[in-house]
Length: 237
Image (cartoon, rainbow, N blue to C red; front, top):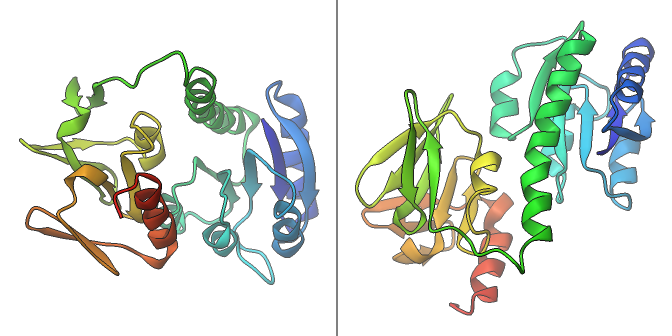
C-alpha cells in the first residue's frame, strides 16, 4: 500500500517512517512535518493510506481529513485519546496512541490492508462475478443473513451501526466502510456522516433530507453532490 506519514514532531515522524519501512506491504511515498504541505501533495499524488498526527500547527489532522475529497484510508497517530470519537465520525481505519509499539503499528497497518483487499478484488472481478443477493452481518452472538434488497438505511451510532430492514433492526460493530464494501455501490449511498441509504427505498427527496417510510434522513453538504450524481447516473432524476 502506497502511504505517507505526517507529524510535526521530528522524532515521532522518524519512528513512523522507520515502522513503515519494516512492513512488507507498505511503501513510503513521502513524509511531511505539517498538514498544509501534505494537503498540496495529495491533490496530485494518489495515496492509499495516511499515517496522521492530530495536534499540528496551521491545520489539525482531523481538519485535514474532513476536507479531503478523495479520502484514502487514515490511521491517526496521536498522544491524545479524546479524539477517538471524532475519528469514528471520520471513518478512519485505526487510532494509534503514542508511544506506539511496532506490534500495534503492524496491527493497524494490517487493518488497512484488510479493508483495501475487498475493494481491489471487487474491481478486478467485476466482469466475472455477480453481486450477491445477501450478506452476513456480525451481531453480538452470531452472523446473521440479511437480504440486500431488504435494507432500507443504515444509521451510525456511538460504537456500532444500526441496520434498518423491511422486517427488523440489526446492530453490528462494523465500520461504515467495511459494510459499504459488501454492498452494491450503485444501490447504496452515504448521505451523512451517520447515514447510508438504499436508493430504491427512498420515497421523497428534498434539498437537505430524504424520506424512507416515515423516517426523514439528513443529507449533509459533504455528501450531497455525490448523492445527486449517483441518482443521475442511475437515470432516476
